[in-house]
Length: 62
Image (tube, rainbow, N blue to C red; front, side, top):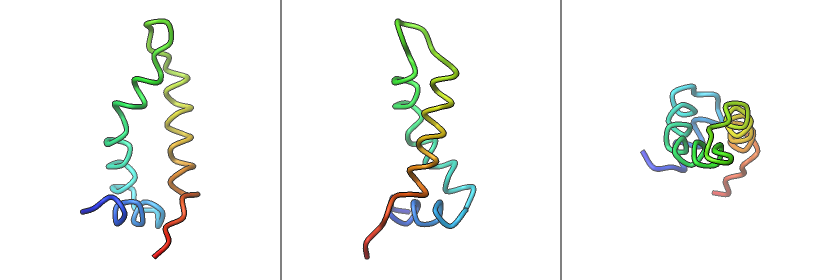
């Protein structure tokens, strides 16, 4: 399944699609949640929350 289709399913509320997107972006989220060499769990959760908001706000033009 291509990313556009995955994103559409996630926007429709498909939990598996949302989890797949989170899985795709997990390495980037983890990388950006490391501050001064330490993993910041709170920051990671904020990044996940922001990604979930972005999924809903992203507009796909067909």
